[in-house]
Image (cartoon, rainbow, N blue to C red; front, top):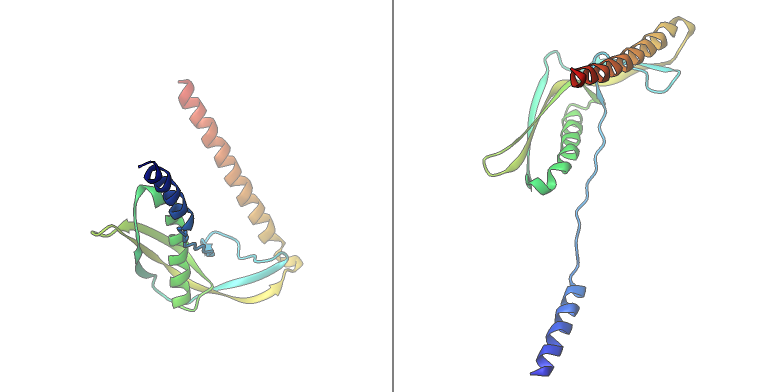
Length: 163
């Protein structure tokens, strides 16, 4: 009987050490350009965006291998990026303009991502010239405006708390 109590824990430890823990990992990167963003790729380089379709496109991808659970919700952002990338590739595009991403679960709990937007390609790359200085100024003003809005929102939130 003593041998059984001694052998059982050792066999459990050995079995747990022998088990392999396979991990599947994916990471995706996608470029998402809004119509108000500057098309500057690398300063001082400029490029234009050629919209490839007259109408927006909408495609849904259902990830059958991904069951949405509370423990894996943080992974959904990677699947959203993958969906935007996949749709852009489908149209031979570099980016999607005005992109809307809708995430839902299917009836059986699978992840469904719908991407709507305009596929676009970067064209006419050229070096920035002096006549293009207004673009940099516009971009700087836009960033300052965004910072001011953030500060105003923080201040507004603080005022609401103080009321």
